[in-house]
Image 1 (cartoon, one colour):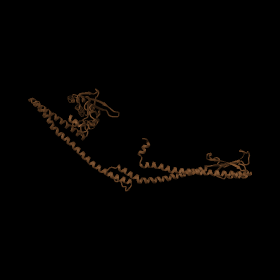
Image 2 (cartoon, one colour):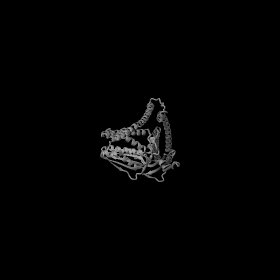
Image 3 (cartoon, helix red, strand yellow):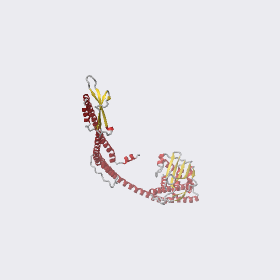
Image 4 (cartoon, rainbow, N blue to C red):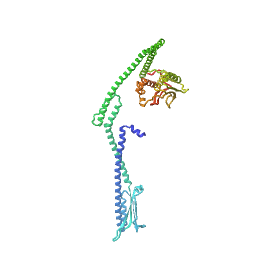
Length: 490
């Protein structure tokens, strides 16, 4: 975009109006006046030329009589009389015999105006006229030549002066007309538009309806703006009230979830503990395998409910902005070893193979080890859940984009069922799985990935996914290597 286009885009309506009207008005008025004056000046010059043509013909005719009568004194007087014309520069005559100038002829005259003879030659015009004598029964005979030189300098100076006065007068008149039109435009259109623009930038509390009682299009526009702004203020008030109610409801929901999570964890821990105790006691008494299986199911169901409650509690803390981050030095290799050893029992039952690729110099980072383990375990268990007889690959690397902080990146690649783009779009929504059929077949609530993503965002990164249906998925978790200095976030 050039400077002119940027200037035009940012200019006010009044400036644009002046930039359009002023050149057009000046061009029409001054240009029109200049053209009219130029035509008038050309007409004057044409008339002067025609007058000198007539004077020259009459003078040549008068001189022919004096040539016939051989009256040199009268011929001289006629020539001298032409010098009384103010614009005549020079008059001269020569006697001719058979077309050749006669030397030392008494009819040879040459008179000059010493004041005009040095004028610009380009402003002088020269006219030649034959001096002819008529004889009976014969063709007119040319006996001499008469020449008159006249100057247009004075007339041109007068024309230029008139042109300058005309241009100044028309420019002044055009300026007055433009000023009147600009004032009328400003009062009738630009001032109300400016009020609308200023009012649009006012806060709802400062808004005052624009007074403009006219029945034209602008008046109807201002009336419509006042009504629209009034509706906007009312809508904003209602939305603000609804937002406050939603915020209060969300806070109440988070508080309720936190409270219920704490309340449910105690009895569930008791259920899990008592199931383990019963299993140990009944094992010594030699109960049937069916009874032991039932106790295992009670324990497994209790652990599943406890994990769900912990996930709900984590999510409620994140949404309330009260999640705790304990930032410290983390060994990436130890973190990966812990995650892989923990998730190994989940990978083997489905016939999967785990491949770990971590550079030996991966080093340490400043982050929250507990939350990082939670993210890694979730991504690995997710891959194990949706993969059968396949390969799950965990890679870790450092990466730093130009001008950006360094990040630690974990890629969890599987050869499982994969996802469509539509399923990926629903992937990070709380309590939503990519496909309802996966809930029936694989179980889960959809909270794990939501929590993992928000934890990574709190740690200066994010979680993203790429997937191909039937070929597998790759989840990428990024965190900053130099994380938050605060121990809590809220």
